[in-house]
Amino acid sequence: MSFKSVTAAASLLAALAAAPAQAGVIFSDNFDADSAASVLNFNGLINWTVSGGTIDYIRSGGFGISCVGGTGGCLDMDGSAGNAGRITTRQVFDFDDGVEYTFEMMLSGNQRGGASDTVTYGLISVDTGFESTLSAGPLAPNAPFATFGGSLLGQNFAGNWRFFIEGAGGDNIGAILDNVVLRDNRTANVPEPATLLLSGLALLAAGAVRRRGR
Ligand SMILES: [Ca+2]
Ligand SMILES: [Ca+2]
Image (cartoon, rainbow, N blue to C red; front, side, top):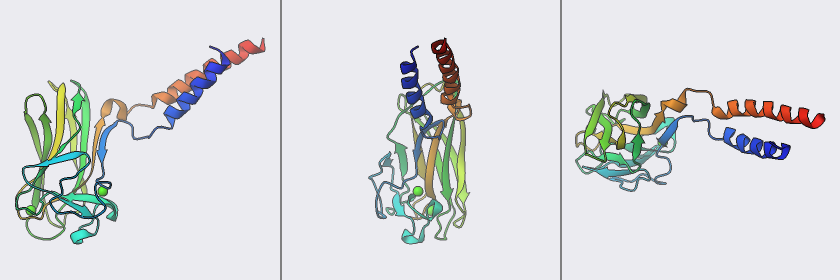
């Protein structure tokens, strides 16, 4: 390897090392970019389709609702049409068998009094329509934001899937959803390969310099 190609490779690796440190994240949504204002029965989510009812898009502070961090956007999982809706990822995930993935979302109570709310979530197979469903809640109306979800370990898991999250009921005040994250745990908990490569490259470069010095 010439010194020039070593330099070029080092530049490339430096760029890789500067990539976001969110190791393992294969999908995330904080709902901050979907709309500049609150919209009832919103159906224009960037990353999700809405079906089986409606959701409301909330800009933090709208309708007396705070999103995570008191800023940006979030969703009321029971919209304003008397039937809580389901959101389903537009993205299809091609999972591998035997691999652990982690799904997390933040939910608060409805923040407006009244009955407690439950949310279901899970995977739906694009290939067969099969659904694997879990439940979060019930959440008291004043329950603060907390993380729900957990690991999904694939057995007979290969294939194409979408994620869904669905409110329950129809009183038009639902649990509040924010900060959805999906991780591939193969890469979430290991040292960044770019760091290891850079170490190897430093050794190569040292060797090249030694040879030039002869
Ligand atoms: Ca948000
Ligand atoms: Ca409700």
